[in-house]
Image (tube, rainbow, N blue to C red):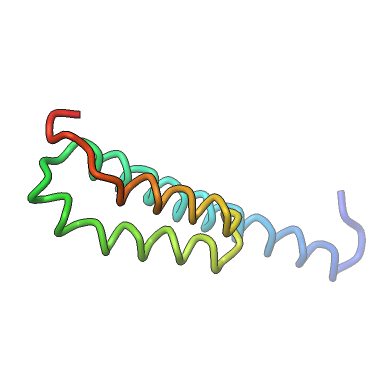
Amino acid sequence: MANHSATKKDVRQATKRRERNKYYGKTTRNAIRDLKNTGSDDAAKKLPEVISMIDKLAKRGVIHKNKAANLKSKLTKKKPAGK
């Protein structure tokens, strides 16, 4: 366990950041899953929101910028409505 007050504060901050990052990541993963399961009409409306979420994750450093680019690329490709 940490002995210095600054180290204790760092542990508290890291815990808060970890929980926040986990929340943002999970929320975005759920949005991506929902986008994949919707029809093509609804997907076109939701796509900009999900892309924005992915960009924010990359900006915050939760995911790598190349992973964000790959996710956005896969989502924008045309998919059949049933899949």
